[in-house]
View 1 (cartoon, rainbow, N blue to C red):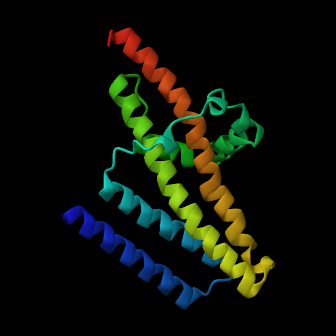
View 2: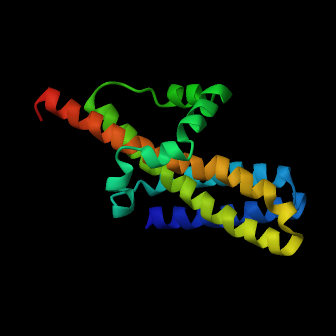
Length: 181
């Protein structure tokens, strides 16, 4: 009951914060798109931390065509990874979630990829809805910042998580075999 109440409260606060953002900044321009994405990131992080779901949905199971990662490499996921390193995001992320070579750490990292993907998927859908609204109300040019930032801050992170998860699963399998489980 407490978890449900907290989740509903987070959703209400998120809606109120987005409304305040729209009211005080407006829905046009880069500042709105940037602020909206980071506001939603903070809110969805709080939501997924509160949810503490095992994230066992079939959605998170990698498909056969995803396992080798060629499809993700063809859309530039490795270039995006280099961009994350160049901006310092990768270093910041590794500091918060250091990678260790044991099964417990790999299992935790595997779960974190699911949680991150879920958060970015929620944001992607919300921003896409607002993007369509802004395009119809103010014109396509006014919605370009939302579109570009949605691709860079949400779509590519989803693709990156889906690219990394099969690799982490292979490492988990090797780790289990080494430890005899």
